Length: 312
Ligand code: UDP
Ligand code: MG
Image 1 (spheres, rainbow, N blue to C red):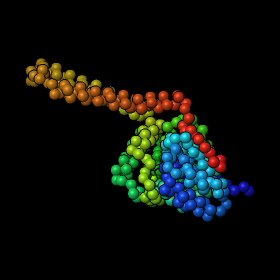
Image 2 (image 1 turned 30 degrees about the vertical axis):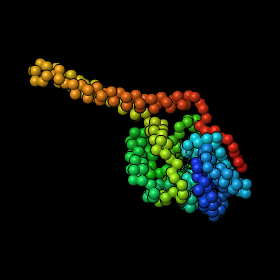
Image 3 (image 1 turned 180 degrees about the vertical axis):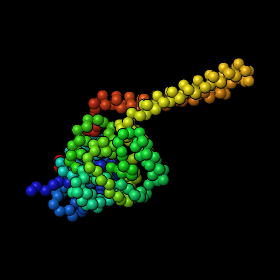
Image 4 (image 1 turned 60 degrees about the vertical axis):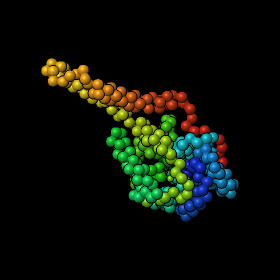
């Protein structure tokens, strides 16, 4: 019988300090697993440093190392998406290049796969080398997204996971851009199992997830999974109508019983204008985030552009 194949997908953006160590560690683990063939797919997400050259050098000697090189930086989610699309494995593993996720865990993930799970997601019990702010905002974000969307995204599970071919086929058939993959894995369903691990510090280099990229990811997550924010706009509208009705009643009453001089209400008037102006602008912003994504989808531009493929 033909061996099953494992595809390991590693997105890389300016990771020259870690490419070699990452390749060596992943390869060592894969070599130690018997009964499976494997391929390692590294995606060079428009790196400006030596990442591509180092990868190319290794790929000359090792045909199992395959490279997808983007024409510019498209971001982590598109990089992973391209790996999912071009992988040929029966089992796909997504892992970061910076070795925050220990590749040795793949062996235990595989055991859970063999027990009949289609998705094995790694759940971090400890996050080393990450700021308190990042840990707390991440927690808050997962709580929020689980509250407002119909699907359940496991807490503290990142992109490090094992996926069966069945799930990957589902993801690959989704034509949408601005993907929030963690949400889509949950959306796809199938039998899923967690595996706990301690998330290490970055091996070298700095985080490539800038605040801007993180905010985009969070918004993509919420917007692609839920339309509740749009309903919140309605709620804000109704609340402001109720508040303004109360103010009108108060104004009429104070005019009738002359308890207050309504002409002197400059401060309260400015406050009310600013408050309702704010509510309206926030509502508009929420709606525009959806419109911007609809616009993005209708343009039908590719999610990423591949400049070069090696060994693929
Ligand atoms: N990454 C990428 N494109 C980007 C940003 C990040 O391919 O635009 C890769 C990066 O090289 C790493 C993974 O995504 O392999 C996770 O990024 P990072 O470790 O910087 O994020 P953090 O762990 O700090 O959240
Ligand atoms: Mg990292």
